[in-house]
Length: 438
Image (cartoon, rainbow, N blue to C red):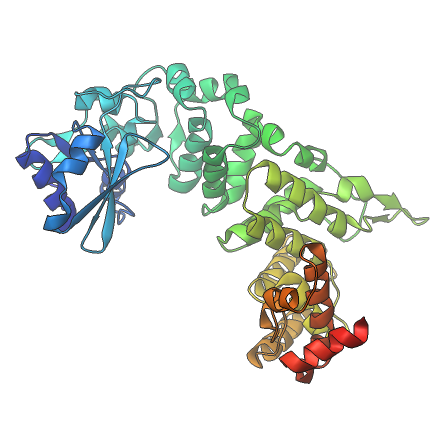
């Protein structure tokens, strides 16, 4: 079998070979190639130690070699405007350097990623990864308990590949995943967060969420979702429990991280808000606001960045808004609260929410109309955020405002005035407004 790789990748392999080292492409690029997909990246593995790799790739020949800060075994090679990761052969749990490609491949996550290739050796597949790709099977090269103990994030990675590729998890591996679920960090792990993100961005994210539930991992990562399972809101407008409804909404959204997080968590506070009226009809007043705050807590615990947390929280807080007879000023304030870059996701969430219930009484046409009005407002490029003001926080400091929280409060005050009357957005006018406020 011959694998056609980019010229730059072949050049890097050749340079390592000419300096007396072994070098191969490996892992995901070969798996994707065999699946008929365009590889996203071409990773390289070598028996050259990181310092040796840096010496080989001399900047005078157009290469730049940069050692990784986070992983001492990786060197990034910049060449002709592209970047490539060069990994040193490793052993297992202790991650020591190795000199044998078979030893290195033994400790990859799954056999479908335990394949290497170069033109000299051809396909190196000591653990039948090619056969497992043909069978569409997720399997470990060695004892799955040992494999998971080397890196517990592999449990989520198996779920991710199941969701992304439609592969089946081998029975022994699946049992090990269940038995070792408590080894997965419940908070603060970037590796766990990144695998969870990939599950959410898969073609059918509900499948991955259901698998996490089956494994007991959903309860570990997002225990706040557990009360939603089987929870009946006693509403004539809903035909599913809260959890099932949320999964349908999740699948009805496009693969955008902010939108999918909001879809998964949008009704998470309903079990805390249910009241039953005298006619036996259920209501969950305030669940949108409460859900937004719960999302902040959950996503913070899972180490999401502040921008994502803010955007998701805003979508959840606003997802129940009804736009009947809304004024243009209210539209501007809505855009301000949600964010100009985030506003269209709000309408996507609301439309998905409507699709998620066959009994919904909400009118998608009304959402489409307000969406068009928002686009009209945005097209005029009027000031809608503090960044649009003709004055900055640094200006306020130079004018004598004390540093800290008060700067933000003053900027919010000025933005309120400018949203009401865009003609006020001139530096001298804004300064005059401040003086009159004092």
